[in-house]
Length: 152
Ligand code: ZN
Image (cartoon, rainbow, N blue to C red):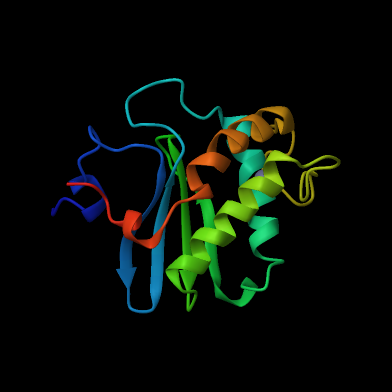
């Protein structure tokens, strides 16, 4: 079998940020990297799960909601995938920066965190989600379109 494109990126030189990893027709896939690969600590599953709920809720309620395809965790726990359609790159970066700022400051009940709405509703950590999202806010603050390209 062929090695898939995401395995061809040099994970040794990758730093936290937002990268365009795939373009499939009109669908853009961004990799939102919180952790430099192979340098623990990785995102804990409970905090990661809460970030998923909060960021997904935010982007699906935003002005760009019709262009949101997916937001969800990477199995390696270094970050998240963000799939969009019809959203300019600069707007996708701003939207993600805003979603992380929202997550970093979030107080109250985690949206969708009940047995009827979620497959593992007790596996959440709002304090952890806020802390990890806070660390990414300055990373994305000045992130620009030119930085979406993965470094060689
Ligand atoms: Zn859930």
